[in-house]
Image 1 (cartoon, rainbow, N blue to C red):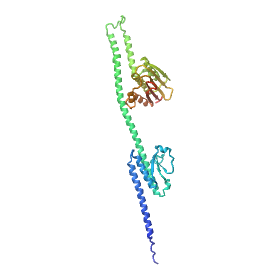
Image 2: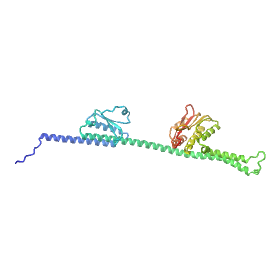
Image 3: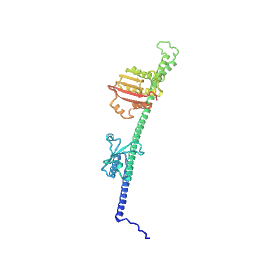
Image 4: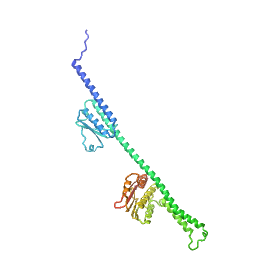
Length: 371
């Protein structure tokens, strides 16, 4: 029995197979070229070049599927909110794919992934979307980090200025107390010592004689005044509202017309809150003395039956100068305002200040009852 020879393909069949192999090789090369070019460009993308890079990737992807052109719209783009998303719009998601789209790929005339017949082409299309999504997510996080770092640096700069100014304020306060003690208490105490050491100290009945008890009482009054300037005993003994009332009355003693609107005089807050709010009020009153231009109408409001609690001190004086307004616009340039804001922030509150509706300046602090 003769062996049968294998049937060899005809020349036409061989050429057709070679053509198929060539087309397949060309397709694979095109896929690899698309992925490599896009991966290299997207890896080098920065916050500045992101939009141009992803748009070029979208254009190449459109040519890959046989369409005229494409572009990428970020979800933050206003057009995305109003545009009706059709079948030619493909969502781009961040790595993981569980979140909402972070951008949209729009290819003119594209009918969706189902319109791509070759499975390998569909896989490449998906990988290209993943590359774009990964890059947009990376740049978005870099921008967020850069924003946070900038805020932190600005915060540190402001705190540095505040720290320097607080040290200066402490030295000024010590100097003030030193002058108070020297000019008042020390001189009164010296006078008392001289009276007691004088030859007639034991005989106080003579006409025109100085009574040591009166001098001692004056000395005690001076000491109490200095102590009250450091921390009023009313704040510890009776609470915030009586301390604010005493602060307002000190303005009245200097010729200011003060209107007091104080609620919940029996309210006691934590020592931290009471101290912070009183220091804000004290600074506001000090600013009135410095900048109002003399005695004027002042309103002190302590609205402690609201949520949050509100302290508002307003004067009808000269108001802030143009230099003060400009300085106040720059963080850290106005130590009084910045310190008041820091005090409120420390107890979870906030502070606003500015020119009054008609004249003068207002300071308004809002803060919670509990910290």
